[in-house]
Image: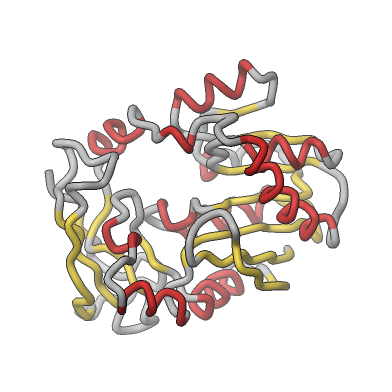
Length: 258
């Protein structure tokens, strides 16, 4: 089934014709299914130069994908090695704020939640895959089966909100950042990680024809550091520090402050 096509840039709203970047075949992706068209078409906005797919999933496609979970995404998977990776992330956050409520959006294997709790934070997880949510409840970690944009109506006041390898999965990322801003306490910390599109490491993956992200079925966006910083400022965040993420290949990690 085809995706719902974007009528304008999903970040800046520019309606002029975007530049075609490339196509990729995602039929060999482990989450590929009959509900998803196998060809991904990547575009570059003529206004803000953001790189994004030509469309996003409809409700039926989204529900089909939620029923599928990769092994490395399950709570507790590879927990000892992931604990070390997550500890470095929590230590960076703790340089800004070392206690309080922490919301992890799209918690996946749960490593960041487990480790943040170990450091003394009061943790809550947010997840849209039912299997992950159910498994995390068995581990007695507070979790919500919700989208972050639906939490704005509640009186939450988080010290930290993390969206690690999440924003690129959202059709309209700005909505998620605006929700995070509303849910954070004054001087609260936002933690983001995602693939870094505009760096030499990415271009090397392209050169050697081994870049996995063009055919990453669940991704709608490829962010550059520059465009991500612009988006954060548009949502009233102040980008504070940049790091190389160790979660996945060629990823960046950003700490921003409300």
